[in-house]
Length: 231
Image (cartoon, rainbow, N blue to C red; front, top):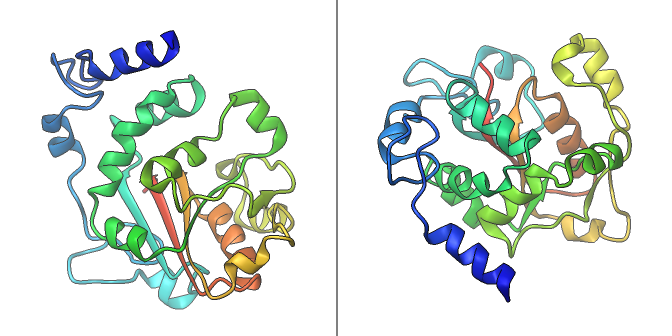
């Protein structure tokens, strides 16, 4: 009872904006969202910035990725990079409410969520999960749509080094067997529209490896949805 009361008080007490430090505000105030989260034209299959009027970047035209659609809320830059680090590494899971609200308001995200049969968070390895105590992608997926979120279908089979530390050929090789679909639950993917959820997309190698596994299991349409995209 006391835990529920304390949780309720946290959500009603005023807080300070983490960016401009104004009072009272959400963890990121409306003015800072307006300044640092302006939408930009992006490639529809890798979410990299594009000149106005273009749909796909040259790399995706030449070598189409296994994602049918890729959406992001913001660029991985100030102030979002530090907020994500707090959310991901410093046990500040309460930030998920602000992050998910901003992501939902981003172009094309609501239609993608509405059309999805399943939201699948990118899974963590057992060791990484034990280290952090929670999967930030799972928290984000549940905040976006808890009813459609399933954390038991897509599995992480092995831990891998941080992708930005590896060359492209190494990234492709090391992720060959990183993900799998639970064979007892694979029937949920047959003909399904799936949204793969993660906090940050860097090289895209992990999302692509997971998407290939889901496609092989029968997923019909796969959207990659991340809060932030490196550029």
